[in-house]
Amino acid sequence: MPELPEVQALVDFLAARTAGLAVTGVELASVSVLKTFDPPPQALAGLPVDAVRRHGKFLDLDCDGTHLVFHLARAGWLRWSDQLPRTVVRPGKSPIALRVRLSDGSGFDLTEAGTKKSLAAYIVTDPAQVPGISRLGPDPLADDFTREDFGALIAGRRTQIKGLLRDQEFLAGVGNAYSDEILHVAKLSPFAIAGSLKPEEVQRLYAALRDTLKGAVVAASGKPAAELKDAKREGMRVHGRTGQPCPVCGDTVREVSFADSSLQYCPTCQTGGKPLADRRLSRLLK
Image (tube, rainbow, N blue to C red; front, side, top):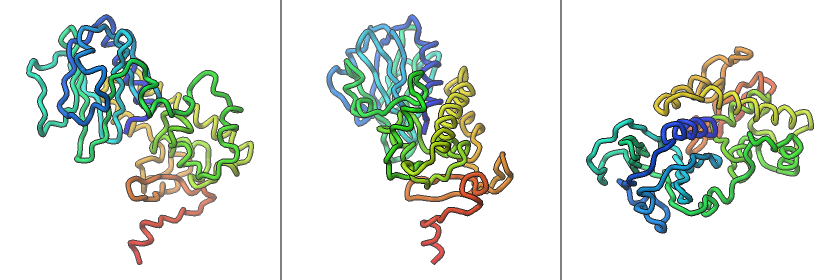
């Protein structure tokens, strides 16, 4: 799933390639991908692309006040083409869910792999009309998001810090991968209770949050959309690296599995050398 750094890179990528262009058509290959009905897709035809923005993990094409907003979810992606085929995309077995055509013949497809479809698109006159955007917490990279703001958000939260970082109503844009990375940099257990963190731990977590995301944004900047997934994987310290040595201390990166996801961490760096209980694995071993 693309998170804040990759979504920001996609925003920059699209902004550079759509400057001075207009939308000439929006084609649906999956009826379920579009979550709104008014304005219709035809309303975007002929409108200039004025800006491309990010709201958490949502991308927003502002076309003269009509917004095409989309969320790539777990298995979605954006595939750019300098020259789209002239044939109209049709519903079928293709991974293409939605196609946007631009006035110079270029454009992009929103694609989604797998059978569990959760990619979502919206056509609205105000991004706040999208439920997921209206509920977003603060952007962790906003200039005015201070250590004091972060501390106030955490105070009193009886929630494990890993889950809290992933909560889009708490912070906008952080997901499973970067929450692992942030906690590794901050040297905190993913199971630590947010409201019980000491002031110095909150400070470390705030610094790790900002530094990790800023570094990832810089690393992703300028890369074509097709290269962002590989670049994200290559930049990870612990996420997705179960069984490999920690780049800081050399200990083996461990994993905790859940029903539909997993987390990775370093015992030496984050949990005082003690492996965390993997309840799913424990049940399988009984």
